[in-house]
Length: 407
Image (cartoon, rainbow, N blue to C red; front, top):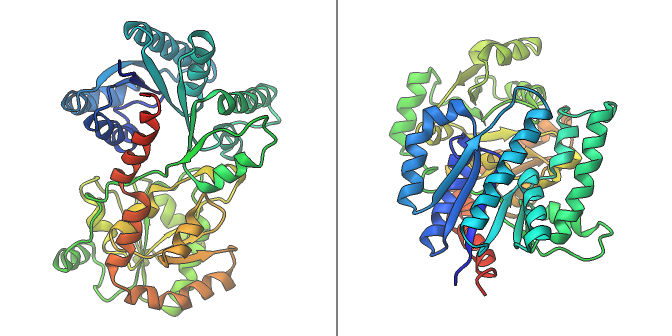
């Protein structure tokens, strides 16, 4: 009798992340013949807005979707409630399926649920750890080791991290860099680690027709001949807005008509203020929000995509989807070293330039070296994205893991 997969997520399927980074994989796995259920914690606002769409997706994919609602009113206390509810719902689904299941646990709180049922009921589980979650809480200033409660939480999760790695039947990380880090730890045995990066829908992120790009630039007020540096996504916790503006200031010295195009939902006033401090006039900036449907065309106005991410310890495990999306649209990339496998992917695919240090000398060197990348065929960048990040390859990788539970 075939084991059913129960996918556990503290993130909601009605969240943007659920729709872009979870449902496409699970729909593909279901289409490949695996029986799949979801157990998730939904945020009420997103649930009200996106329920019909997500419900239609899960029904069409023949996926059973079980959910409760996520609370965030009281830090730590609310998270504990969310964990207990998710655990209870998972147990109900395990028993409803006569224990003939395996658990696919997305990140650390679901991983704790997997660890619990492995020990209690001998239910096999996948620890899909994503990044180094506890370290991200410290690096992102969400927790502080000076706070006794936070320090205790950090110690707890670092201890459980090792227990989950050792108890899991299969482990998934996003990067080779994260796998190397784990392998270097003095564990009593080596976990069975698979590397599956955050994939992009390369059927959605495609190279656009020149005429559409011309029309969009005209609508945005960007002269067609202008050199466009582009940034895609939010500018929160991890992204180095000031350093990217410093880089662009150096661009203006060489290309005085250049435009910095931010495709972001963040407040444009904050970006303009930071640019003004650096003497960058607002006429060099275009800041626009975009729907998912619009993003590929917006990206295609970029001559080069730029992103700097804080190269902190926890970022060894990060796989920024923007890298895949930029390359899939035929855009070369300038990014910094020390983040997941970004430097390895860019360098091995000759897909752009990696900054080693945040200095004006490094910026000038990169700007002076960019011209050959602008002359390359856009489809060469897309080929790198397809090889490294295609959704179909991600589904194939998960299918191999799921198959081990059917033997």
